[in-house]
Image 1 (cartoon, helix red, strand yellow):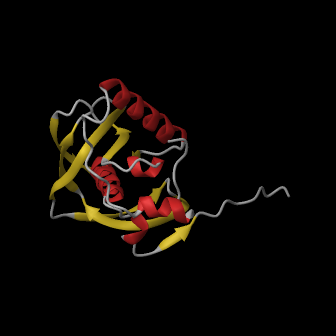
Image 2: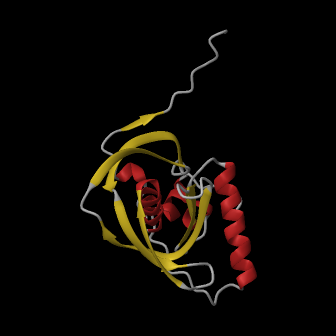
Length: 170
């Protein structure tokens, strides 16, 4: 877990395209789980991401971290979820541009349900159920897709690359 894995690397793509195995809370101590969560959060923030799935850092199990703005507090809310599953999708959908830390500088519009109910476990193994909408619902779906071997480019109708403009003074 020393870098974010990319689709461009065929060896890394293999794990990114595999379905993650359920996380076994008996396989690590609470301290080890906390250290993993902390490291993934740091990697996500350093890459300016809002979510990061375990398989994006070379770990084969079903776990992701996410951090999105919280409308109520005005700050950000952090999530570390294990063995997550989107239980219910709302009927209303919207198309929003998505990108991915494993597919740098590539973006595309992805249509997803606006609201979802996600179940899973927190870092202590406690069962959780979260009703999400807006950006949080989108991040939960994007990261859960990762853990099922699906990358956003598989769902996008059209893709485009971000072209970094050169300094006009040259």
